[in-house]
Length: 303
Image (cartoon, rainbow, N blue to C red; front, side, top):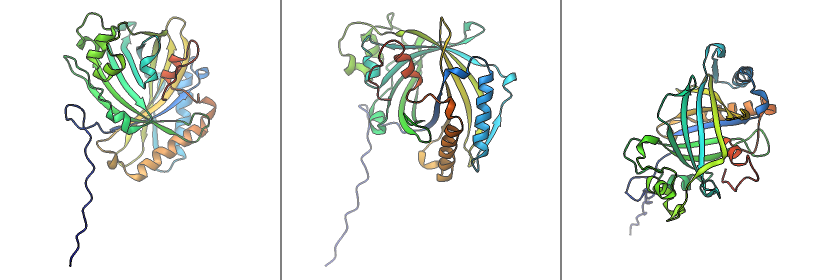
């Protein structure tokens, strides 16, 4: 008598309502929120770049090529967060913002809408179909974001950010802040908004000026080279510095394509930099979280 062993079934591919497969993580971001105290001049950018160089020198297999910041010009963007008065989007892990690039005091491109679902649960983030219903192009990015532990240096936790980016001009309806308009353009929000009347508004009445400066290139070997930068966030009007954010981002087709040695180098570099720059770190928040908590108590977030 012969027996046969049943072959394990391949895991069922998860799909969105239209049959398209769930998006896969194809970006990795490493982020450090920095205290505002150091960023009243460009010297703060230069000083932190030196700390990045110090950390890279201590990690075998990692190289850092610093830029001469005296010869580089920062990029400027206006960032506007939009939400309901009760922060319904943010409290349910959604973020809606508008970004407009500026040069010499004038906008130089069509403003873009950034819509994202960000949550520590990767499967939940993947299940949210962030694609818009608009007459125009859009880009989808699914990112794994490393941020420090909330109350100590030397570790990290992961957030999963499922993003969609598209030009504001692709939304042709007159009242773009109306909740019904938003629900039509962003079907992921339809269940959250329902048939509610009303509008989104500027979160905490605050416009953000983002000053972004590239610091240099980090090379982790095996073909993984990425740009490192700092974005400085200031509230427009009083130009109060809210925070800085150091970040580097890598793109890959499949997570399996990133070798274990490269993952180890990235992790070691990220933790080493935290330890070297711990006096600079602003723990327990994100840039978005800072905007939401500017006036009064912060809402419950999933960050």
